[in-house]
Image (cartoon, rainbow, N blue to C red):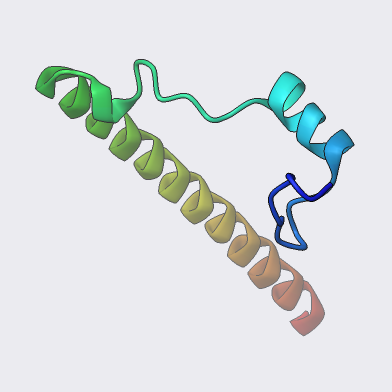
Length: 79
């Protein structure tokens, strides 16, 4: 035990270390955006922007539907 390094309290014990090393493993960056060519990075950015735009459009569509339902309910109450 004396030759073992001191571990921080959040590092866990031998079992957790084995699980991480053999099952989870360290994060890999093979073929990640940082490792690709400039064209690949640009395409990735364009794809990300399209996905964000789609999400914005979906949120706006749902918001408009909610507003329409709310206005319809208020109209029915007023009659």
